[in-house]
Length: 126
Image (cartoon, rainbow, N blue to C red; front, side):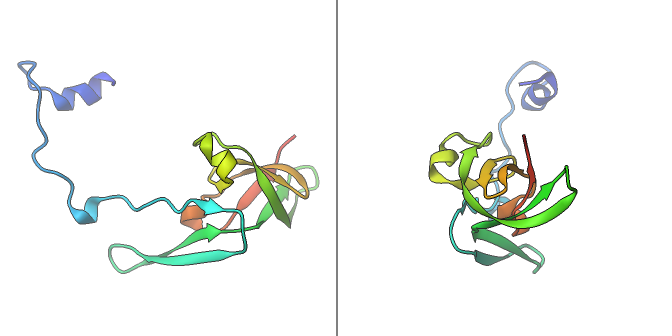
């Protein structure tokens, strides 16, 4: 922990501070979508204030940008090669931002957040 984080947890005398209360139901974070490689499947999720967000539950195509030709093409996703978010996501083929995927156009890194944005955008890597 950094000093600024510790400062909030301690009194001027050095004693520890306890939380005043637990989180309310509306303050809790939502569950992760865990987007898998399968036929396109989305779910609509209501947020606080009445707005909706599209959660991508499964997808088998990606919008891939090629920096050499400067073109975007829709290609089929084969599998997940690496995932810095969680190493176990690789064997489960879960798509998250930053995950490296094998596509028909070659290896690509996901730049969008599939569980939040509802789309898989990627850029070809060498």
